[in-house]
Image (cartoon, rainbow, N blue to C red):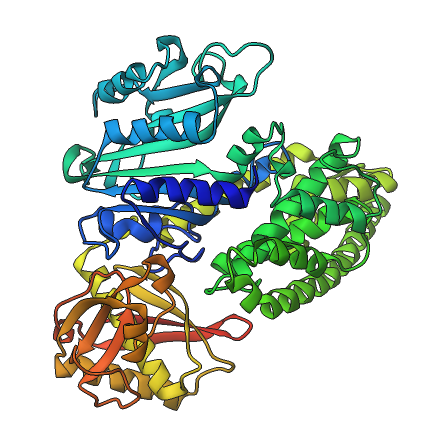
Length: 615
């Protein structure tokens, strides 16, 4: 079965069960300060999981683009990926555990033809916060799953969320496919390595409070996720996810560029070589999907842009280990666009953006590597001087020195070790690991502070800032021109950050004009309202926003000013802003306070960033 076939089979199955098909949302989260990328299908749906009505109704199904970099060091094995597609179905306060598990079982055994003997499941074992999930256990028993195939596991295995410090969460039940030797036996709790997780049904039935307690939710939701690549691998009898049809052509392209002979669905011999090929394929696929998104991010030094840069540069390093000395990233990106362009047309639309930045980043990294080599030569010269001064020969490069080469110049430890070996030196690998861990700890601490507030923080200040971004978006179009498009947003209770397309730095006069117009709109005390309408109707009325793809044919449009008017470039128009969005917002602009731009800077090529506060 191909990925295309499974996508359609899954969505059509749930459409027959009354679910509305919704397209994949952007990989760049809208107004979610807790994550850099969309890591699951639930992120674009948080307002609806918290009780808002969705234009598509209470039952939804989709295929969501996802990026997770938490397991980046695991990439290179047979199952881990940084970009992947997640099949999902949703209940927004409608059906619950019994129906969800029944549909999951039916789809796996009837639609996909997987013998139930090759399946095992896990359920939440219970703890002081919540009881054993008897309902899920009984549902599986009722479907004929043997008791010894049901693992009862703790919260670290079978509990989802909350994504932040507080919010919706609950037990889940996971489904696994047998990948071990011989006849299937046991379960993920007894012989974990023999079972591969392919599907997860999350039951959001609690709301975690600030004091750590768990209160039952008024609206209980279901959030499911089936990994597309893993499931296609299982259905085709592949023991490696890189053999599926959205990965193997990329692998094959890389091997061809490296002039490494290979056969269909067969990696060349050599563990290190195979690991490098997989890392290159995964990382460039992910970077292409991020850059090719409608909210596409170019490589840079901050936030999502830094992740894109890291992915590309790590791919280049492993490409060199494969013997690829010439520029190759754009060629691989073209292969990715060919594979996904039909499913995600934005990749074709943004192809030139992807290819140009891919080539530019490769060129920049070549210069960085050259600088790093010069730095290494300086390091050697320093060691030689120390020897001449003390008479004591230094035979080891310190972990701190090795980490500086990694952190500043992108030298991986193995590259430093290789260069050191050529000069009769060793490297303090433990010291490098210690320096790396210290750096990671500082980064985590910074991220925790930066993304404080939790997933979809709905505090009054966050809601105010969310509304202010609508005023800012509309005002930038009025001041700078219609070419302005939102390319990212990040909100905390203390400030807003807004990325937008614009070719040059804003002048002081332009920034003052933006502030004055927004504060004028606040002083006018415009009403804020919303309506559901068709996409074509919203477009005709002049609504802006790139986020319609996460709602479907019927969308929610928020208006600041007269909801019966049309959005125009006139700052005094009674319809000041009309934008596609899921909310939430304040009821009137008068409560926002005074809008102040604190910083305007470059985010990446052609993208500017404004940071602002409400006082």
